[in-house]
Image 1: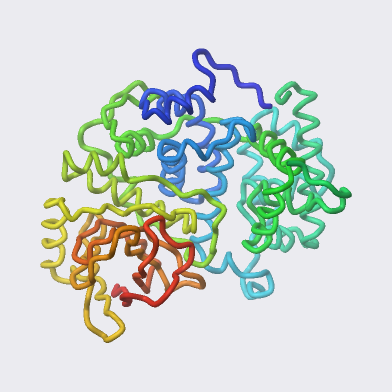
Image 2: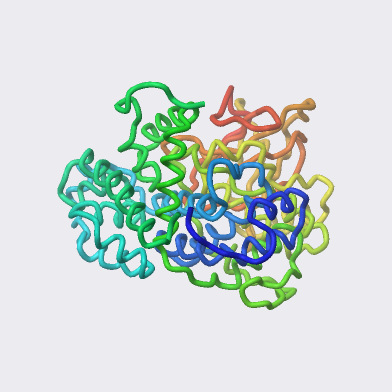
Length: 190
Length: 275
């Protein structure tokens, strides 16, 4: 679990309070995690206006359906971030129909430079995140940045990196596992 | 319950791609199916997400975000937790005024539904200007483009004179009518009108539905139909909603009150959006 210390009620208690229509409880959750949710939405969404709407939706959704958060499955923070990422990716992909097509259908377009895009996404990283990402083996780092912050599908990521989709998926898995190990060693995760 | 079987039975690579939302819809559904009965993979997924959650820098969100949340939950005066400032009475319009495209081709049913309009509806009841938040919430549902928005009621507003009068004003404007939806016999039964704050669905000649059923609005111009929300069970009604600019074809079906994930049965009405 990622370490995030907060005074006052625990996250799970706050969600219970949200179920009881406690505005202040939602406000406190937003105080704790609004910044993290916003950052994920902003990094994935190409447009700030879309990121605002994604971020807003994550919290209004928690208000409307607090029962969808299962504390037995995940921590509130990572659940909210997962919601934000899924929404942001969905919005981002729907911005351009060409993004929904397979690589073959896009050969007429100039492919964006993967290197440039990876460098842009790397700027979204915390210091700890950057250190952990930089320790990944070649391929893992690029796949993670393009898929997570770039919102690319595995087929798009494979095309950008000039590799196979199965290789991207395998790199994502090994990359995430290695990332976890490094973050645990650094004390960011327990 | 834990999945029993050799490790190779677990879609571990796809699970990682799932954690970063990089799978195509069909692949994602397969992982969803697996996760439903495999606690090992659920735990693995949670670990992936924890790690991902530690990556991004944290920045304070712009004040409009909290303004939108506070309005939507019916507490528009609640101070912004990041600035301590109270939301001004006149909301920033940026969250609802920007064009928002809709993923009508994704068939995404993993993203959770977005938001209830309950809070926004309460605000709207007090102040007509808050209608824009209804629109904002509705368009976010459209963005999610999900089966999960089942049961999401677009502002059921038969008793709301504000909505009806605003819709009528919009209908009276030049080019105010964006679409006319006709039934199977070609008779016009509903119209979509728009003003600067959003769109209104005017149900004008549909029949009232029995308890347990409701009209459901769909975007049907994309690769797959996408639910835009529930319209209530009254055949004559005015409902505020946001019409994303990419939507070209609309259709209305009869659905259970909780909504359908895909249109079932025939269209009660359909029509093209004029731009």
